[in-house]
Length: 359
Ligand SMILES: Cc1cc2nc3c(=O)[nH]c(=O)nc-3n(C[C@H](O)[C@H](O)[C@H](O)COP(=O)(O)OP(=O)(O)OC[C@H]3O[C@@H](n4cnc5c(N)ncnc54)[C@H](O)[C@@H]3O)c2cc1C
Image (cartoon, rainbow, N blue to C red):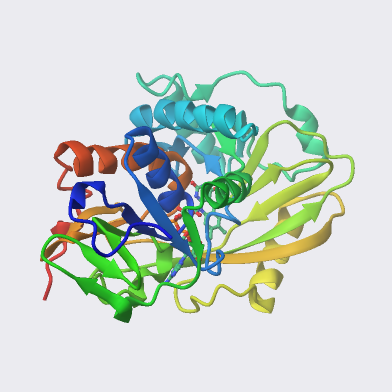
């Protein structure tokens, strides 16, 4: 078993991470790089958004084609982190991918053209792209533009990290019971584990965490379909209101919707019917639904991550609120969090969990 209750020097105690989604996995990864001991508790991904996410990194978003928050910093950092993980775990998860963005109107197309001339946008927007064969498959009313993006196979990252952590003997497969956490002056104790700090990374399930129940959660469920679309051979992600993301063979990920009332994690008939109806308007060809997935994105009211220490207790930490963009933002903030924990680097107020006042 890990650290003993009687370990006198708290600096040698492990960090105890709760949750092995992309947040907890990358935090553990950066702690390891910083030569810090850690243990992870995860309930076998019972409520994992990371496992079903498409893993798209889309630098230009919204109807007005705005650059995604801090993307110039996040994208290169994410690429080098995932490529390092690929090397160390012997897997392939990163793909540079274009996103073919179909316009909903001519006005949108004009707006796009203006953006292509703006400084700082040119690296993400391609003026020329030979993807006109997609007209055979996609209903195209107003043309398309091309965004230079990427995709990470997050499901594969999580699965391979799970094996990696299991093999190292640092992953405990159980549900964390908040009532069993004891706070001591210099450490926390959870069952037989003494830890330097507990770092909560439970994704949307954090609303049940009594230490962080005061945060303004606006988590959003998303459902997705796995499709077979015979003969559609595209190396690119297609976006027309929804994303169509090529997987292996002739399979595609299609999604997703946003639902704020039902945060159940279960795929629903309403969700499936809605996605299927939308899909029929987008696709000109037949498709087959081979799977239906659902999970909840951990979103906070101000749409920023929440990281750092509990307002009243320095041994309780949080790394969450990755929202709709965990793939691109988790690598950078996990590293910043580790720099904060190990070197005292200041966390920007914008992401610091202490910005939320404890009532
Ligand atoms: C349909 C859908 C599509 C998405 N597509 C994209 C995309 O294309 N690109 C992108 O960047 N983002 C996407 N996202 C968002 C992305 O999934 C999240 O930003 C990210 O996965 C959040 O990671 P996390 O580690 O914080 O949470 P999670 O992945 O949910 O991980 C939390 C982990 O903690 C575990 N856990 C929770 N409570 C406990 C407990 N008490 N004890 C033990 N373990 C516990 C859970 O089971 C889980 O394994 C999508 C999300 C959805 C739902």
